Image (tube, rainbow, N blue to C red; front, top):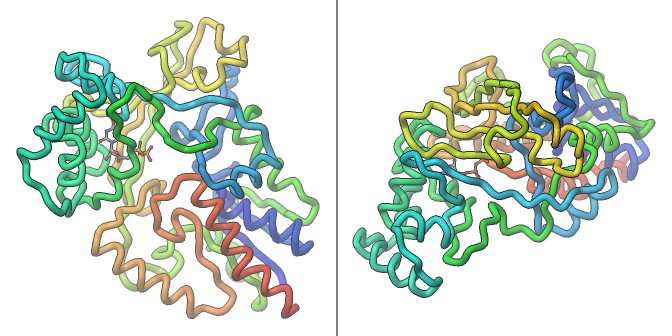
Length: 380
Ligand code: UDP
């Protein structure tokens, strides 16, 4: 029996580490890119020494004790807590929407209960009883004016579709508060790996039972795979099955990198842009993730990256699943076929076609390992 894992993001790396450590079995993990870590990959910018998240900001946050304990074996996390700002109409506001945002937007000095009463009246105007989509859900939480300022156009840019055609679950990712807590996440544990995501992944995969092959495409080695091997596949399911039921829809991203001769470009890690006349959705400034790295942090240069949402087509990086009715039904056909295919396990954010945060991918990998992979060792 041998194990091949396709894709070295959090889901694949967790499964590899578990097979190597718990089952004491050899496992090969391949990745078509030239690095491990999938979209969580980070590396040091040569010129400035600033650690850059190569596929956009990744902030670790979880309330799942097992996931926190598991990843803490491979890295130490900093105490960084994510706070986002958003530019709308030439002014900067706090995001997610909280009492700072509400008071600045309406030009008021509401207390929490004052804001709640005011917004309840705003929300009541739309008479939404059962929110059926992203727009209705957002309006039922914050009222139409705040929705139109901070959510509608950002969401249109991000997803390139009307928020009425998007599932409400997407907006439920964001907290909404009537106090002055500006944290982007509610989770118990938050931070970024002190020594970088690249070190975290290197540590996860450092076990002698694990072989890593980079620049290695699954299609190019498919014929070499022994017939009794278990293939644990974290790529796109439609591609795996030759698009036989049709193509799943994804959203992609394009990143434009710039180095500036200023110590601080925007004063924060992430600035969102709510308005339609600005083509990017956000600007990341990576030095702010590591104020404790004093030399690059205080240095006279900074690295920023503008994030542009992009239409996905074959060959591009798939970043977000589009979990609408059509795609959910189509994915179910591929998942059913995968379940019927001996020696195949499908998973990860792409393989499961789920809009997961990093911790959900790790939690799912730990579960799949315990329930589907570990039991195989009993039959060896
Ligand atoms: N969103 C928004 N305005 C913002 C930030 C987020 O409308 O300033 C909406 C948008 O629809 C987005 C969703 O909230 O797709 C989830 O945002 P999140 O920051 O969780 O997205 P991610 O970091 O995963 O790209």
